[in-house]
Image 1: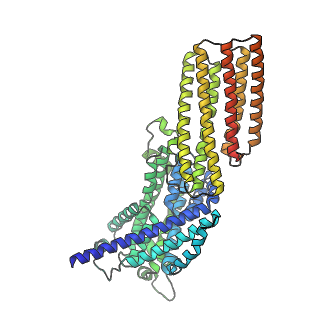
Image 2: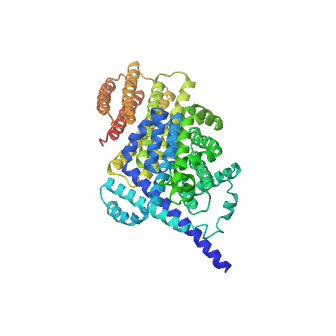
Image 3: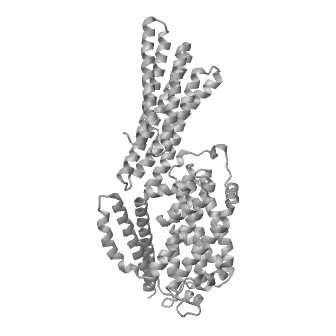
Length: 571
């Protein structure tokens, strides 16, 4: 008999976990579908992040509302701070907006999942969504995935409601929770911890909140305890961003810490005020037709409980944002104090952390990668200045430093190419639109050409070093000609960097013009050099070095125009 009882309970637990898994899977499919369908819009929305903290709040709210995942938004924000796309102040606003955006999930679930039997139309909705998934057009396919995920989500919710036993029918289930469910501060703090732990385990505050709705509606836990658990779930959701930042740089860690501080401070004041806030909140969550006691109705009615809890969640996040948005500066300072920089190098943004966060949206991943590629362009531009200085620098110590620096930059460029290419290759493996696939292929071409530019500059530095060791000298005219080529390359590289910084490559015509100038100048130098050799005006060995250098400059120009062509989609 005991074995039968144990087996029954074990199957019940597995059923609950399976129902929760179905709910989370539906949320994932729905989120990824809307991300693909609204990818370009998300790119435009991200542009508002750079304005001020209020636009940041709006951005975080909109993106989280679209993605139906505050974790995705916060992890994405940490990734962008890590890559230098956002400052800490800008990320603070986005985090606050993400907290408000996640309330939409609770409102949708409480309205549609409990008040209406939307699970009844979930299967017919799948029949409508399935043909859309097989469409060739990417946008229709993405919307089909969204609808399919929506249907699966509510099937999971329906299964969760059915699988969670009613405490009146199974009083032995979680009786210890009821025993500790006293309306005092200590009890509330304990259940804040329960809510945080539940979210950490499930890795989804929306799923944890839905489970809380079901447990409260089925009589497992009192209404006040559920409110405390929801506060804890707000703390638990910060763990995802903290984990994502662990392998990031100091800025990423500080961004995640801002999110944690914001939620912890908010929960700290709200957990004290819960008994005073709940009666006010429940006035908005009941069917008030002739009912004299909305608070009692809200705490007893299975339909009203999820509404009351979702309204409480919304109220908490809105008020917390309004209270703390004026204290972004102190929050940033607190995050800097709590995550100190160990070395000066730690303050530099490192490419090795590209895509640290779980950024599932191809559009957003491409934005992050494009910013890294723009940084790659600035790196190779610095190499042009270094090699140019080797032509005129006379001090041995300074020349040695320049040689070492060029070598270091060439090694960095090799690593950048590999890591950016690997990141983009992973993005390509997802379901992409044709336009985005073409753009990523262009970006792969860009990093390949820039790595070749770095290789050529390193080879040029070795040629100059060999010239120095063999005590070969340029004539004043030769030196000025080489420096003139470097000046042309400097202009070409500046235009290339501009093309990498703007989406439409509006400087493409200027890039083509500079490439023609470089080719023309190389032809002139080559013709004059051949005439000088015939006339015996120059040393043969120094002439070979001279020819090698201006020819290498022209090769750099070829790769520079290739980058601009790829950025403009002209390849």
